[in-house]
Image (cartoon, rainbow, N blue to C red; front, side, top):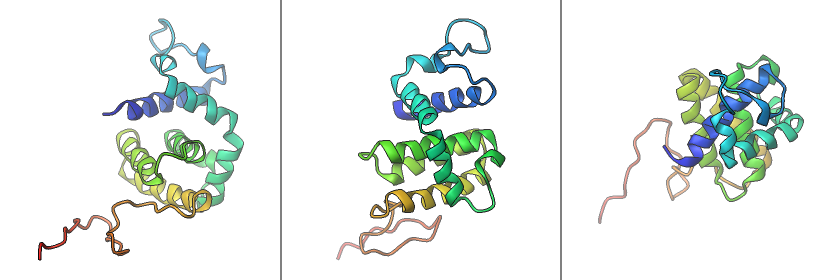
Length: 161
């Protein structure tokens, strides 16, 4: 697992804790009661948590505007915070391809929430991507010829002719 994924997971834990305790992220105490949470020593995790807190209304508005029949407040806490992390990265990190951001969110969702949540998160994030980065493809795995693969279909290499 890469450093960014670790930072995203730490940020997810921090955002989860902040759902139940609206204290400053630096003042959160881990369950053990000893010291500060480990994610507060991770600059990228802190950037995510603080950035999401600062832009929460904007981020939640984008999520609300693209998720059908689900408002952010009705979503599972883990799912909505995974969405917030990915949307924040799409807004703030122009150098990261949306496909990478979405894939990372899906891997985290599978680990912390489940396969069904990953499907839901994928749909919402792709809709958000189309809204805020309409010129960028969401799936780098598309064939070079502009043809889309069906989900789960194996990638075919061109035959050597």
